[in-house]
Structures are given as C-alpha cells and as structure tokens.
Length: 465
Image (cartoon, rainbow, N blue to C red; front, top):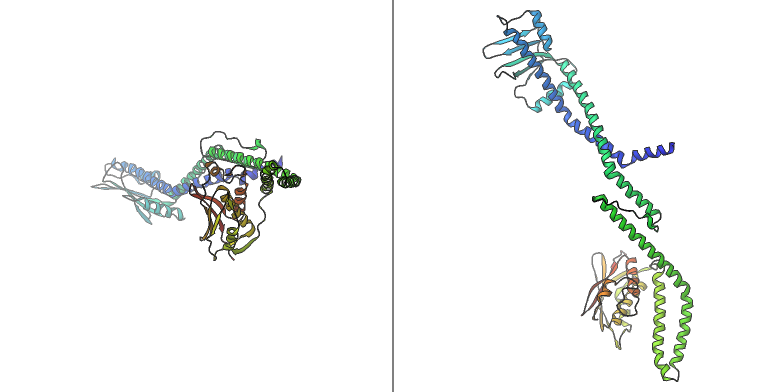
C-alpha cells in the first residue's frame, strides 16, 4: 500500500499533469503580478478621491452658517470624519477652510488634476516603499462641481496601510483564482490530453514487450483530433511491424529448412547431372536431344536453392571494406563473356581510372555482375558502365540497350520472388543487390526503363582515407 502511494506520488511529481498544474499556477500568478502595481495605484487614487469627496461634504457645514465658520470642536469632528488635518475648498469667488488647532506643514503635494497612469503608478510605488508618515497635500477638482477645487491635508500612514491591505486581498484573490484556474485546466488537460497520451505510451510499451502478439496492437478510439490521428498512425505502424515480424519468422523458418535440405538436395542434383551427362553421350538420338534441356533445368534448380539460401540467411554478409580503383573492377566485368541469346553482350567500361571506391570489392563485383547478367538475359546487346563523384557519394551508372522492364517487374523490382523480369526467375538477385548496397550505406535504384534501354544507378558513400 505504502509503495503504491509512493509510486503514485512520484508519478504525479514527475508527470506531465503535475507540470501543467505548476505552470498554470505560475503563469496566472505572473499575470496577477503584472496587474498588481496598476491595481494598487488605482486603489490609492480611489482612497484619495473618497477623502476629497468627504472633505467637500464637510465644507457644506460652513456654507450653512451665516459667517461660513463653525466652532473648533465641530471642525475637529468634521476633520476626524474625513481623516484630514485641514480642508480647503476653492470656489470662484471664495475659499472655505476647516483647520485643526495647529495644522502641520505638508511634506509632499499631489495634484490629481489631469494626472496620468504612469505618475499614479510612480507615486503608489513610492508610498509603498516608504515607512515614515508624511503629511500629504492633495488637490483635485470636485467631481460634481466644475470649477471647484478641493484641497486637504492628511497622513500618509493610513493610506499606506489601506494599500497594503488591498494588496493582500488582491494576492489572496489572485491565488484563489490561479488555483481554481489551474485545477480546471488540469482536469481539462488530464481528460483531453494526458490520459490519451498515457494510453498511447502504455500501448507502445505493451506492444514493445511482445510485438508478435496481435492482441497488443492498439485499438483507436475513433477520435477526430490530432491524438486520434496519432492513435490511428500508431495502430497502422504496429500492425505493419507485426506483419513484418511474422514474415521474418516465416523467412527464418524457410532459411533454416533450406539450410538443412541444401546439402542433400545438391547431392541429388549432382547425381541427376551425372545422369544427364550420360544421357548426352547416349547412342539414342532421342535421349541426346532432351539432355541439354535436362541439364539446364538441373542448373536452374541448383541456382534457385543457392540463391534462396543466400537470401534467407540472417542479414547481409559482413563487409570487408578496402580502397580500390573502380575502373579495374569494371574492366573485370567488361572482359567476361555474357551471352544474349546466340550473340555476345558487349560491355563498355567508361569508368575513369582516377575514381577510387571504398567498399567490399567482392560484394560490389557480385552486384555489378548480377546487373550485367540480367541485361544479357533480357536481350540487351550493348551495356555501358559509367561512374562519377559528387560531394558525398560515388555514383555508378549501368545502362543497356535492352527492351526495358515490363510494368509488373518495375512495380516489384526489389521484392524477392516477385520482381523477376524473366520467366522462371526468382527476383532474388536484385533483392540481394539492394541489401548489399544498403549495408554499404548506399543504395540501388532503377533510374530509367524504356523501349530504348534500362539504366540502374548505384550509390556508395565516399569514405575518408
């Protein structure tokens, strides 16, 4: 129980939800701080205006008397009600005053007539930062009597106390608002964002534990927002990975099976080849006629089993990189004899002697030999090998004048058992070629294939010495 509470608290303390809660409180409080000083300045102005209005009302008592004067005791009561040491109302033709016995000398004068917000903020900050009790002389126009100016003397300490009390009330209200807002934002985000993201995360973790289990593929909830799209994309990706793993397991099983039967099958085929050779020397002309076809069928069977075994083994063979002149490798290919029907395929080597390749020479030879052999089998009569260097890659181009690849072969060109351009082919050659080139950090691609010929483009990274 205790461990569960600790894990829950740890998750809340480090999770996205807690961070959202803290950030919401922080930003709400920051916004309140930004409006705190203007609010306090407005509170100071309202305090002074209230005192000025009360002072104007107090002076009405003078106007009610015949000589515009009251006794000192009444004056003291009026001043106490206003909270001032002295009041003066300046009218157009007269000035009415109420003073205490010994009115103090003012330390600062504040004229509120036409004062701007920045001046109010400056004066409010100055009041908050002081600790003494100044005598303030404050002037302003009467709110209901244009042309009448009200002036009063008052202590600054009560004003400062009121401003601090207002600030505390504002802070308490801001804190309450921020907490309520944070709670609402937290609950909203928890429902709209955090819970779906947690579901996505848990779905990833669950699928990672056993990708072969189809029941672990996440099931989208049908949301139409970005998270719903993420769920659908994740489900699609997991389904693809699951299918790829299943296919990989089947290929691994096939490779294991082919490995086990390869030795026995080669022995059987070798025996059949000996029988075919014997048939070829037979005295019966009918048997001699079928012998070449039988030998060719046996050779194709051997090539099929060998190619299937090469492809289904675990990964590409290890690379043994070396630096060599690409022209020398191309010349070896060009000097070999490739037959296109009854004619010989002419291979032109136009690779510059200055080009240096950094790759596994034997495996690159195998790739080039496979492409040239494919061109010969497709009916090409002339093939050209070219190469050039770019800033980061070495590009090899293999162009022939054959009839081009059929559309079905182009669609499945590098897929094993599906991308062969000739009847009876397995399509393993190009699949293995791509595997070898990508193991080098490069690639192989069909650049062009029309009735005038086919061009393959190979890329290899240029490695430093």
